[in-house]
Structures are given as C-alpha cells and as structure tokens.
Image 1 (cartoon, helix red, strand yellow):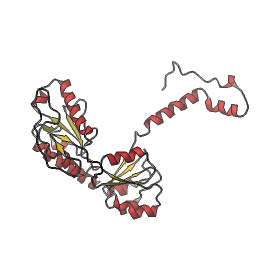
Image 2 (image 1 turned 90 degrees about the vertical axis):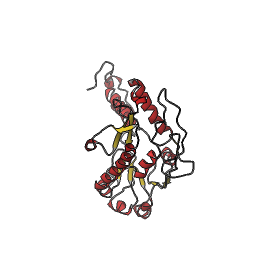
Image 3 (image 1 turned 180 degrees about the vertical axis):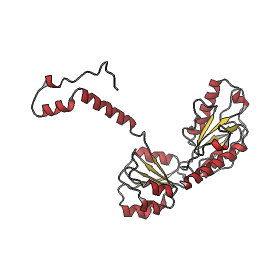
Image 4 (image 1 turned 30 degrees about the horizontal axis):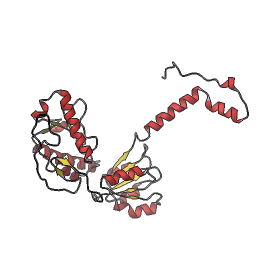
Length: 293
C-alpha cells in the first residue's frame, strides 16, 4: 500500500507543479490536506470562461475534455457535473509520473478550446516527448502508427481482439499468449509492465515475486479471487477488474429468469420432454401490472 501511495503522490506533485505555473487553472480542492491524490479535479479560472453563463461554461469544459479524448490522451477527463468548469485528471498508481508530465508539457496557455469571443490560438512550438504525443497549438496527437511507449502487456488468457486493438491504438506493445503453464509464465512475466488475465491464469505470490517490472494486473471480469491481492499490494502492483463488463448480460439474464419463473417454463419443458402435454398445469402468472419488489 505504501508503494501505491508513493506513486500517486508523485503523480499529484507533477500535476501540482503544472498548476502552479499555469495561470488559467487551479485545484478544485484549494486546501492540500483535503485534495485527492488519485482523481484530481482542476477548475478553469480564466475570466473568459468564468464570465460565461453556466451552460456555456459547462459546454466549454465538455469540449476541453473532448479534445483530450479525441487526441487519444485521456479518457473520461471531464469534471464532475455540478463542479466549476474544469478537468478530472487521474493520478492514481496505474499511471506513471512521466505520463502526467507529458500530458502537461508546454501546456500553459488556454488555447486548446478557444473561449467565445477570444482571439485565435497562438501558434507555438513545443518540445516533443515520448509518452503520449506532441502538442501543437495546444492539441495533443496520438503516437504515430508503429510507435510505442515502451510499455509491454501480456494477455495470458483468451480475450476479445478488441482488447488487443485498444492497447495497440495507445502505443502499447502486446503479446497474446493464452494457455501458458505456470512454469512458462514464470519464465517471461518479468518482461512485462502489465498483465491481463481472466480466470485461468493465476498471478499468485510466486508469479508476482518474479514480475519485477509489473505495474498493473487487469482482470477481465468481476472476481479477482485468482489474484494474490496482498502480494500484489505489497509489491506496489495495482489490481484492477471490470465490474461493469458484463452488467448488461447479467441484467438480461436476470430478467429472463424472472420471466421463466413466472411462466413456469422449466417445469413445462420437463413435462413436455417427458411426452406430456399439461397445458392447464403450467399457466403461470402474467407480469403485466405486477410490481417487482
């Protein structure tokens, strides 16, 4: 836990350095003692924005977050709905400090999205960086095709090809090797920064001890019982899951089961399979007008 906190604090400090020298933003939590070191909110204080009507301020903040997402820099960076216009920057232990520094590199003028009635963005040149891309005119570009961040992820179980595409689109090198034995995993796990698993692969204490570079274990599913969480935490490795990945499927299945129960479908199926035709026995109930409680 100490390792995770240290990493998050370093990320927050990097963001704080940028805020301190950037005149158009401030931390939403002005007091450092109550400021989060993971989901960090910053607000836009430029008078060209704060002087707008509330709806216009919200629209500006939405466009600002949209630019970052469009350029492949940050997802879901919009501020909270009822907060002043601004951004929500993730500084948790799942990102490197270099990522935060790259995000803010050269970005000191408010011209990513021009506020209404403002002059056109100033044409400026900024130094390049290797983590995210290169900002020009306060815009952020994704990495050129074929370029990588230097990070490697091992997908050790069967995942959708879309998962591989997501990693590659963000400049992350991916190796897909489902079905590894424990011995095979131990031989190669120290080469990777991230490990993506489902339920078959078990990152236990022994595997984690060998994974000297590992920063995150991603479980493509809800349960993480196949991951040794205490060992990962002690090593400063973040364990993540996807709790909403199958939420729609689960909800639909629950509704299907309720319909089956109301109309006694399992019992009727068993009776019919046995050669019977007991229509009157399995009438069930109609759900119309009923209240689920």
